[in-house]
Length: 571
Image 1 (cartoon, helix red, strand yellow):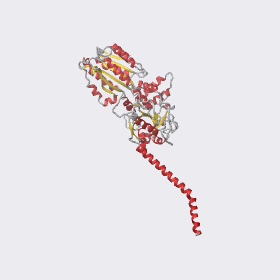
Image 2 (spheres, one colour):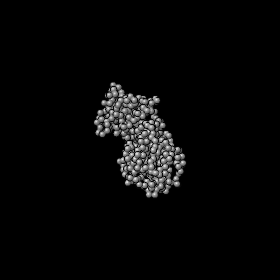
Image 3 (spheres, one colour):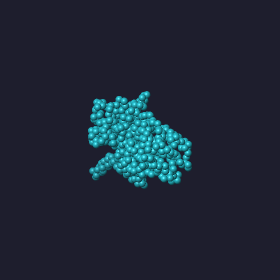
Image 4 (cartoon, one colour):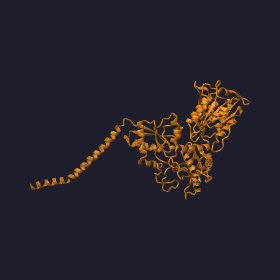
């Protein structure tokens, strides 16, 4: 009896002694169950709250598009409750900028990530007034000069780092340095700023800059990837290059592929503008897409995305290398803080300086197809229209492949009852025109039997179009080819034309009219007055057989822009 009574208290005491531990364990289990249940329910509620998935369409430059797409895919895969997904399209920034001005049939993106803020500025200049001129940088890559190892060795590498002063300017070595077209490539724009820095602003600075830009002109390529095709050992009919400006990330990727001898990067000191890859939500983007885009931007500039950018060779927006590259002295691992981006005015200045010596032009041709162009030209067996077209075709063949050209026709009532003009060939590069059959279109042009000359209205319309589509980095021109004077009594007067041209003229974005007149009916004084109102010149001859001479005289004017040489006088 005593044993039985004494057993129970021991059991009770044992239970009591263990009860705090059991109680705490039970509470912990309940807490964990509650936490996981809350997480599960929260995720289910978030997922179920997505009535639909918002699709954010991103257009990005080729260098960064694969990385943005990779991060975008992770968002979709890892965060089912994000309620948005990202579609990334790769497109060159020049085409994107143009499509934001005039739709080319492609879907307008919600977000644009060009390789440089320079493209945002250029888009505004082209006419996309509502595109922001700055955005949030998601990564950066310094602009360097990629050198072959042999060239770098000649400059003292690896004992010393190669310097830009050895490549550009009055003390530069005699090397074959390629040049990306600054009118298309921000790396080319940065190089122009680097050359300015090296030469400075002394009394002969302009002459020295002009001389240096002339030296680089023969090795200009329209597309940056073409520079890599001209490295020693590559299958190219052109002279191999010793180096060329490009981005650091391009050098890293080229070296990683090990297609040939690795390249050595020469860094500018002081640094030139880097590629800053700005993230911009375009103004027309719908509110729900804008909200999703801003959430995606937070992901891109967050810590988790940094590793992905680093693996791809990019730096942080403030120039810090994200991946240690110990042992590889061909590129630098030091932090390289980018300088402030140049203003739109500064960019326009260097591009106009470049265009002045290199003649990357944008030419809008206005071609007279009035009845008088059917007049025969003695001794040729052709009429004025035919000899003019022949001269124009030869002239186009002399232009640089990167020059852009388009053709309008004009007479009277040519496009409906009110317009004396119409577009024949849209503005495209000469290379595209020659390969796309534009010459066949031009050869098929015929003068109208009873058409009169609607010179004033047509000239004003062409000039207005050229100013609206002005392109920095190019000589912007309207070339008027005619054999007579204005015959449209229902249009504006000459005084009104001169007044309107004066209003449209902008010294910061110069567009000149070049008048080319042939035949005995041409009013030389009038054509010179019209051209002069825009800072241009007129070239005339009463003898239509001299059209080729006049046309080439005009072309020599186009290739002889200040400060490279003195302008010629019109004849």
